[in-house]
Image 1 (cartoon, rainbow, N blue to C red):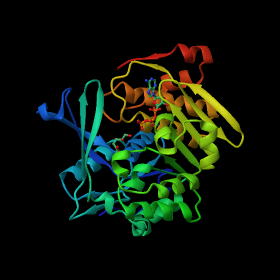
Image 2: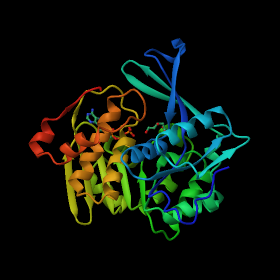
Image 3: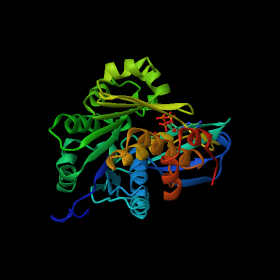
Length: 328
Ligand SMILES: Nc1ncnc2c1ncn2[C@@H]1O[C@H](COP(=O)(O)OP(=O)(O)OP(=O)(O)O)[C@@H](O)[C@H]1O
Ligand SMILES: O=C(O)C(=O)C[C@H](O)[C@H](O)CO
């Protein structure tokens, strides 16, 4: 059973709410031919939680896991990465979700085995559990994604509740549009969640599919977000907020595998936000942490070393533009 936070503990500053999955990476080659898979932990919010903790932000991950070996592995892995898992509930019946990453023809495809998972049973009551309620009351930031809105109707209801109740924390939402999870579902609840958020992160490509536009001004207008971050792959990341707009070009990266780069970007951007850094540095830290994941095969990777981060956050625009990142 998760331990409630002691009354005096400050609790995690940041909380990430969503499903973790055991990820099996196979290939290169078509799934039908792969015999051996490498196991690691995936899941968007869980990737962000690990990324925030690695950047020194006290972070908790809120979710449900099957009371099975895979769930134990997720807990062990997150604890080892310094993430508080006291808000995790174990389910004796429903399993921990799985996903298989197929690498074939130079691209990755995700195959989910997650329907009926322990996390999909998250509901409004989950937020009322003392272990969760106490952490929410003390957090400065809560991050979630469109994936959590998609995994079940009870989970979508939970997010509606989270977004509509009075809150002290900043609510951050990454669109993370996953069409496979939205078949036969109306994304209206996701629009409401995005509109209620204080910070919205969105990739230009997925915006085009989800909202029919990749134009940041149109998105800002439609989402009414207080801080909208639009990432455009290898090109640039742009923030629009009431005070104006800031744009920072992406780094030049020798890409190994792209899944998880958006989560790593979110971790860097949000960590720098909590640290009160100026907007250019918030975007730069996002690019830097994304670059670390782009040069690794897993969905998450340790961020660049502190001295590298400090040097590049302080670099001139010319030095930044000339920076190249390759596999470690
Ligand atoms: N080819 C690339 N070269 C350099 N940086 C990249 C490249 N692709 C992605 N990035 C970095 O990763 C960040 C996130 O990428 P992207 O724009 O694809 O967001 P996303 O669609 O939300 O990601 P995800 O597919 O992980 O959900 C970018 O803002 C950038 O920092
Ligand atoms: O696609 C999902 O639902 C995942 O959470 C798996 C990956 O870890 C995630 O997509 C990376 O952003």
